[in-house]
Length: 198
Image 1 (cartoon, rainbow, N blue to C red):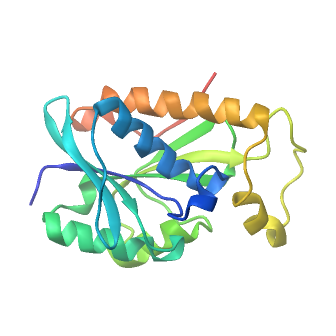
Image 2: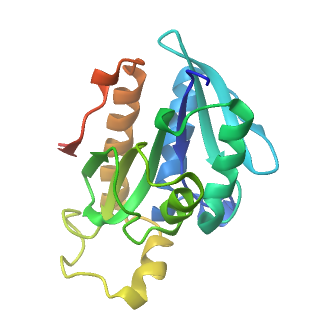
């Protein structure tokens, strides 16, 4: 099995979704690729950027299928690279986590996220790292803190951040990218934690 770490951002490939809440995962790996000077190359199922991170091989990935088929792209990728699912780090938006908060977990349910649901269906719910990046209304400073009605979920996640929210999200993405730039293959670099970006 390959020892390469695979950092995957979930999002929607179409340009109209580029700055929406549901594309936070794409934004994380896009910024990381820029910092590392890596170039994206498209395949039918995913975009990839290969390189090194602190001397270790790393592959950044953006599935190109619809969000709810993300797992199919990752299954193909893992088979091709002969990589183990435990080397996977998954970055995605989470409506149940307040904006400004990141929850790092090594296992868990999909929490209603269709992209994560697809990944679990294809790869199993075994140990791979999940970076749940909060997009929820609480903590934004601009939004009502009342829970979002389930009927409005789709409209909310496919909407764009407001000015203040976008500033906050940029701070969160900068934090994640800085953390990843310091990442090495030592298991002690990852732990389950909840981080509030200040």
